[in-house]
Length: 264
Image 1 (cartoon, rainbow, N blue to C red):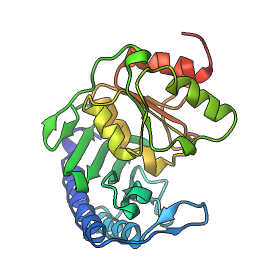
Image 2 (spheres, helix red, strand yellow; image 1 turned 30 degrees about the vertical axis):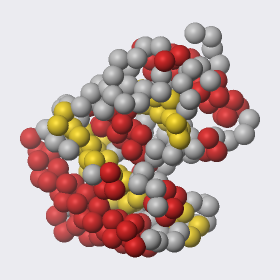
Image 3 (cartoon, rainbow, N blue to C red; image 1 turned 45 degrees about the vertical axis):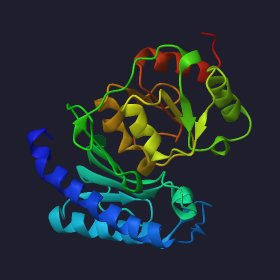
Image 4 (spheres, rainbow, N blue to C red; image 1 turned 60 degrees about the horizontal axis):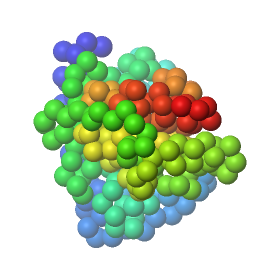
């Protein structure tokens, strides 16, 4: 898909983010309880209403497109163009009254994300990434910061408990303890936007689904950063949920070495 042909999908994605933010803030302001799904992840009525609304908007504008959402079954997953939706990323924070949550909207072209939006309505921040273009925050271009030193890097993840006990947690701790800065937690999708804006240096996470990371890829890469799995491979529909994002490409290589247990 060419950049020019992304205009109509981009307009839809912006409209979708507007609607998602409006619904989310209505529930966030009033307060909402969460329940646990079969996989032990939380869900609220806001998640369900947002995803239903966004699916209907896509079906009306692009009925031939596929849809992969967190809360409902996939539709036309083998279509050339597939929308990937996370209605509320950071549902724990959302339900607890923390503003660190957002909606994630991505458009894939033959499995490759060409458009991504991180919309954080409680913070009034919207990052938009488009393949071949610079990432924007509320319409203004942003860029990652230079930081080639692990010792000086701000490192974050949504929770230290997202890493499985054993090798996975040890690999994470190898990376986290390589910085002299205190780690930051609970950023959810907002952390990736802050990385693209040059505020954070590394986001390292585990147990993510495709709806958690597809929208992030154009945002991070359009800001000048790198995002891969823990082996350094590009993220795809088949990725294992281990995600590493870095603002500085040299830093990314060093972080991968720490995750592998190799000396740097």
